[in-house]
Length: 160
Image 1 (tube, helix red, strand yellow):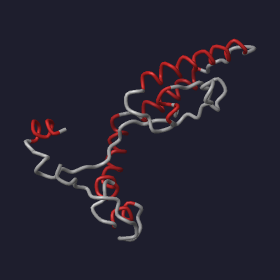
Image 2 (cartoon, rainbow, N blue to C red):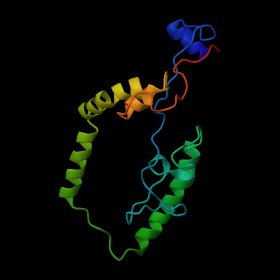
Image 3 (cartoon, rainbow, N blue to C red):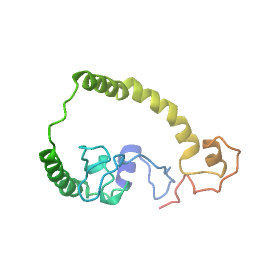
Image 4 (spheres, one colour):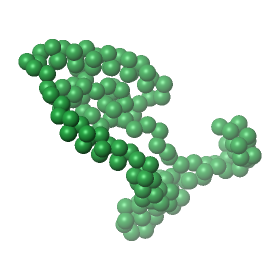
């Protein structure tokens, strides 16, 4: 980190305080799965990796994503295969439903939709929800009164 600040910003963080704030690292979870089979609560849907909570819940430890995916992905595949073999007949996909779903997903992940979400959330995050400078910021982020919450730290680090 020292090298990056010196090279990119000509800032010596051993002498000059640097701003520290939380950031999104990974999005994990969302699909609830059985720990043994990786089957979700939706019949026939199996999930592994970061879409499922995995063995670390929604807090994956750095560096073990690949091993987690290999182990639990294989497990999900084996159980999905067994599930499919037990079906009396394979379910039919309805093209109209697939097309509607594809269109809905394309709209949700379009550049315009992402830009709109980012512009809606960024001001609150930047001003009221990051590492706190004073105790009023958490309350403002929730739309409450100033000074209602305790401070969670400082937005500036101490000199390293």
